Length: 339
Image (cartoon, rainbow, N blue to C red; front, side, top):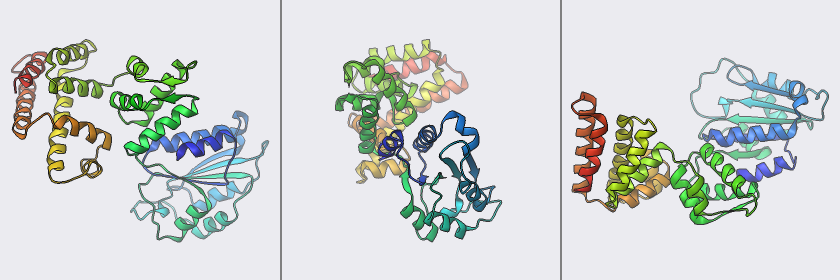
């Protein structure tokens, strides 16, 4: 797990080679920054840090830098970005690379240099010799989108890095309120950890008290109130959003998106799809699918059809200016209560 690598970096326990690959940019950038901050002082950065884009620079040129002795310090850090030769993707490169030179370096890396290869690709070509060699010789971080189990473990470990603990119910609530964006979650976890500096324990009460609700999460709560027949509370959330200068057309769009997801999850579940497969098919996080599946139980197919028609008519009214925008959403919420 990524936090194991982070702990090693905090202890200044470094590898000569790192491979960071995947599509979760936050994990890659956070790991890279932690490595640089722990390996070099601010004064050493100007002399002993170098970064290369391999779409524009031959790898052998970057390796010459990696083999150069550090100046006024004990180590160098060299980062190589966009190694398209590690994938089977058709990526246009401006240069040719001497891959054999890289293979030689991987077998005998400079002891005074930390070489970091950053490959922002979902998959690497495992058939290639250079990929096999790199994975065998480097410390590897696969920065993929985390599933629900991995996400919850990551939250626990992130809280632990801050010296605290978090209840399981608090993790569930945090994900419901903040969503699954790692940058947003990190910000909220750091804030929560600072607040519980004395007790070191994060519970649901503290999460409910401190965690900021995104517009999407407010809409989720609004939809949830509608589902449970709590129209007055749903309207209160809507009025609060208007006070925050959120546009009615944007609110309606997100409400429609949530109901569309509920409809799609219900339909795919009926066809025998599991949550992971649904998430992959709809290109959303599995946790969102899990929440939508719970909400889908409150509606029959006929009711969901009426909801989608109602939202479609509301969208038309809003775009044609037939009614006052604020009133359109308000009327829809009241009509949803009577389905």
